[in-house]
Length: 394
Image 1 (cartoon, rainbow, N blue to C red):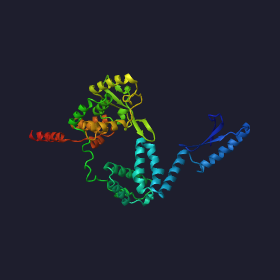
Image 2: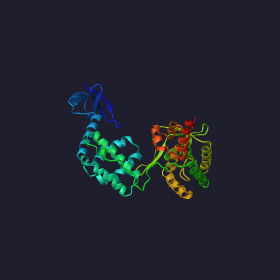
Image 3: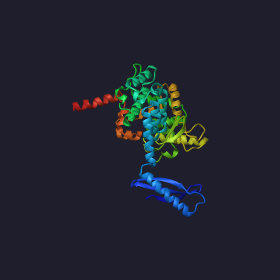
Image 4: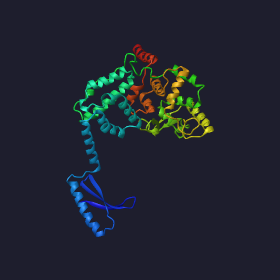
């Protein structure tokens, strides 16, 4: 039996909300607006007829609820994409899912990879007609045109995701990526992309020496990255309220990001969780000096601000600054993320347990920490060998 309840819109217009429950866990509803000037008897008589017809339509399957309509629409889009181009499938089926579950930065990155690398090569080909040869040719062409190995791997991984999704929703019967090899570095590229990803203790000391003549803001920023291993955007997103001088800790609860479409915006840390990292007395001292210097110009809630303003530092500013600093101090490839590698590598190779390092870095899985950030140098390899030798001799 359909139920009815009288309601009004924000503008004061009266309507009846008619609800039907075809099953115990399912509800379908519609509105019937009360015609002006009708008597109560006329309204009741017409409402009874409308509710009865609505109930009949619902039970006959002629009317769907919102979730069912969305499922039908998704199925229709998938059906259209099945016989349309790769580009159409990505835009109508794959990217809407990415928008729902991924960050703005990830969406922008995917969009650029599709636009600049993938669509020009296979965008107009019908999805089921794409072969392993098409994809291999795309990746080889990227390498021939001098694209970095990391860029080729990103395109390979993204195509893997798209064709896996298309296979699972039955838009294709065979996944062409099953027969496509992961791109290998060119001969003129380093064989191990992680080699040289962390600085040595000597290089860090050389960086310290070069920083003595740099602005206090940047001395504090670089010390923060080296001491804690936090991300560039997490550092830009720090507020003074996140600094706890009493127990020597810093709370990481936001990540400052930038995309051309959205501009600068706040997001959660990459893991989606707030974490607390320890801070050294030297770092806290630098931050205290920075707050005093900042207060002379214009006090801000943000730790790192644009010069002379209360606005937070742009998350791309550190990368530009590091590039110029590297040229001035003779440190090759100076980049904020390389200091994150350095923190993790030095911590692990000097005896810190992986679980603790993983927690400080904000990784949800310590296997990620081991895979991405452990870079054994010659000294750590010698130390490992010495442990075995001593055990044998004993």
